[in-house]
Image: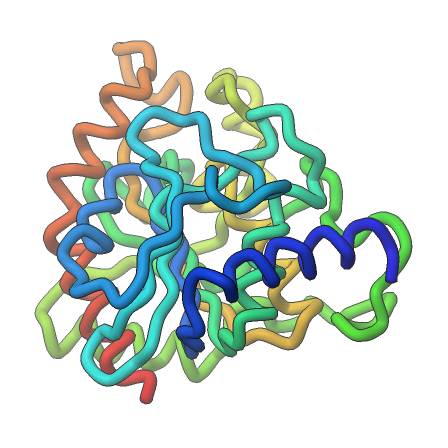
Length: 274
């Protein structure tokens, strides 16, 4: 057992001392979406700080805890606050929560985030279903010794975002009369927002939205055999697209306004996953 695998196992043992809950779906909540976990009738709550060796989120608005419970009849583990590469953690630590939730028993990873719009397909306040991603600008979470128990050395990324889950989200959005765009997400390291020249480059690569999370979590999940789906809340148009400089406050404000619709869609989808 290598150091990375040992770390996941140590975190797992500590978590199992606090709860024996077995989730089917793992949900990572992005900026402004933490209220969904607050509204859940929790069967257990475990702050990240109570798990020795677990990376702790330092971003404002991210509570930093696991919440266990059921959405409908579907058992879920919710990450109320994620860990970002720009916080100074090793990439293996950034995806440790994903690997840990898989170790808990989760079969599906549902990713959410706040993202900047790049293409004309999206506008602030839109929800965008992720159809594919570009993770070239951040280190792969699979660099280093491969853990064969987790997955193959060279995993295919032909279909990162599960087709059937995408269809489920599309159908649910129509039923709920929630407008839903589709597009490709690109992850950068952050924490700075992108320059206008970088936004033009990102657009030329075919991305519709850009953010500072999600893609590496998806890669780690696919490597471990999880089915993955994701939705971005477009909180702003990326750098240089408007006259006002971008700010975290602006991103959070738009995310907060869109949150009720976002939460309704995510909840309805998860209820149908069992």
